[in-house]
Length: 174
Image 1 (cartoon, rainbow, N blue to C red):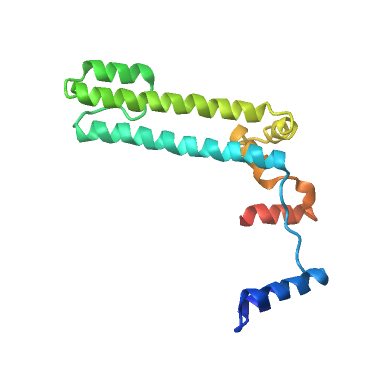
Image 2: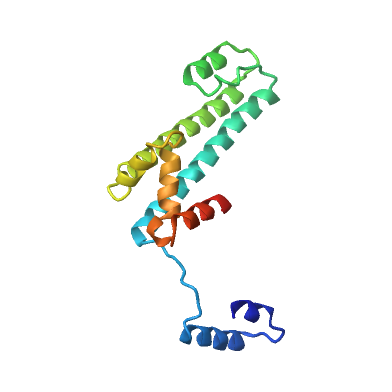
């Protein structure tokens, strides 16, 4: 019925509303899962953590770009370690004071973002609503805290799927 509505040549809000009401009366509308408010709030925290990680990567890339623009050679693997970064600033003559202050500002931002991200993950890991499922999922080899939290918060209650095979197919497809 919904496909027929979408494909109809004569469409307007009044006709669509009438057809939706008919579907509702006949119980033809499929159910839509909506997570509980508590899960949605925690999901929002996980999404915010993802934003912080993206910003952290952008800042690290900015540091690399500033160094490359200035012709400074550096070790990519060690660049974002505090000790190496301080040593790089102190010993490299190609880094003037203006660039050094920008680099320090970028590094401070990265450190602040890392601390905030860690605090968010710790708060989600220790949440009593999620803790049991997260711990069980982390017993699977290769599943860490972020994967477990993402599974618990994005998939939700597995019991809502009619069979285990459907749940698996759903996860593989999406």
